[in-house]
Image 1 (cartoon, rainbow, N blue to C red):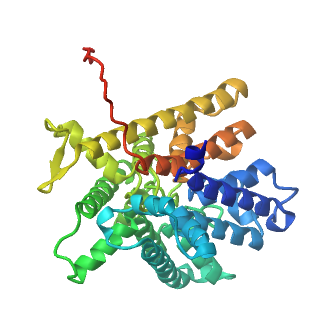
Image 2 (cartoon, rainbow, N blue to C red):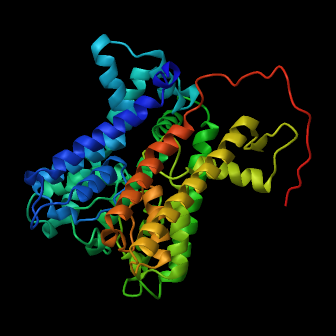
Image 3 (tube, one colour):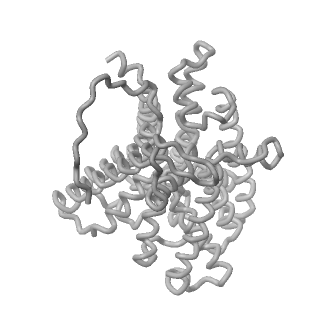
Length: 444
């Protein structure tokens, strides 16, 4: 029990559970609700979890909350975006002016060991970069919204800037950003914030240092993130253009179709904003969107999913194959066998959690409640919740209380559960003095 209580992953869950609990209580009070009647407790819990886990899935329309409720949601998004590595460490460092070895190990384990910064410097850099991007985004969005937002435009701009950089997808408009499909300023700004937020702080710092000639070359981690981000954006945009140019994007001009396709390519990678109704997409586009939601953004970023780094390593292992030592090579660098093994196990565990969530939804919605929700919509909502994306085909608000609770757990596991799995072990693996004889098992 003492070893369990000292686990570095315990305070990770404790922080998020505490923030979600506080957010649920604040959203449940009448001052936070502006709609008719009383907000159901399950809806308050769902909104708080979605905000802290920077997902964006909703069971009630966000504009229905009062200004106080919207401010609470904004703060929950910010708390979830900055995450446990910043806020919990600052909180733990205040009483004694130092950070324990266990907490230090977790924070450094979330970044590259070669980052060259101590723990407090990492925290200061995270806060500065986050607030900087959000402030710049809000200043650009303010004139971009223009006369379409006659009241509280500054708050609306700040809300969407924070939501975009934190990859949350919450919007103060009932139709999300569908009214701004042809507004290039809003679309491109939100898309840029999504991409930068999904790169990760280590990558942003690495790129800045390389650009200022403080270092000769980028790390392998940054190269993989930039490569996969670029490939996914370009390939996905082309895919959506091929299947949606004459369908959901038929009314748009050539340039507007390109912007809409790029936005649709960026948002499934855990952002959740949409300029095109997801229900209007073709079945191939919806299916491809689920793949992007599963992949997510870069490791060490605000984004969810299994991360592009994990996906890249698994692809290398599948197509290149590991050598006799279990290693794979890329960009004239080798990736250690334990990293390859860890990436593979991480992806398998993610798939298992994803399947378990979908199975639970089929029990609560298709078997127990007999709802007329098609299985494809349930799969889409499960991918969206697990990848902490927020895109929806409209099935989430109509779920039963049990189904909503399943998605609450799915969002929590997709955000905090995967992060806990990614944290390296703090104790060495046991050394086996005695071993068993080797056995043969047929594969395939």
